[in-house]
Length: 241
Image 1 (cartoon, rainbow, N blue to C red):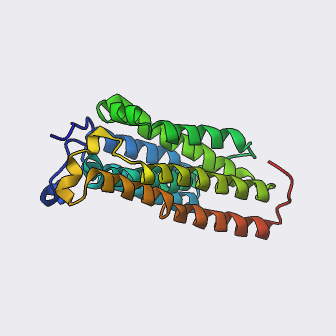
Image 2 (cartoon, helix red, strand yellow; image 1 turned 90 degrees about the vertical axis):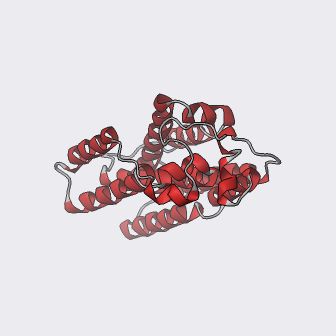
């Protein structure tokens, strides 16, 4: 039997997936309150970015993706990529930093956080505890938001910002490669449930690694292109951050 997942619930059968919306009132209330707080006093552009970020969070936590991530590790990786590479940068733009920040520490902390939560033992514990589940989600989002906020605030250090984004791509690609080439399934919660979806646990893990290794690079590439264009338009210098 598949292991129980404390927050998103048991792995759904494929036929039941589309009915598995997560309508947790505490989650919806937290999203509503957080949105209202951030939107207050924000400009129209920041509000649009905030709306896009909240929509992404609804896809991650409210849509059937939440339940699917209980079954497939590949869905969990999609969940994490949406969190750190789409929701986090949108929130960083919606809540801009007031001044330039160093890039090294946010990069290191966000990278360590991402890798730690993909250690099989920690990942397993996080899925079995509601408190640890939300610690995983909030720490991934908060550290990624910090990283992107520092990148966007580095207005006078275009080369450093671009190199830091490249380093973020590299570390995620390395983690994806490790998952892709692991000789056996690593995550107990995904040892049985993938079979109902027509894939073996190892194939599910390999797909997860490939998603992190290749498609996950797309949002980083788009952000890098936008940062470069903004930097050149603003005449950024080469002074380090």
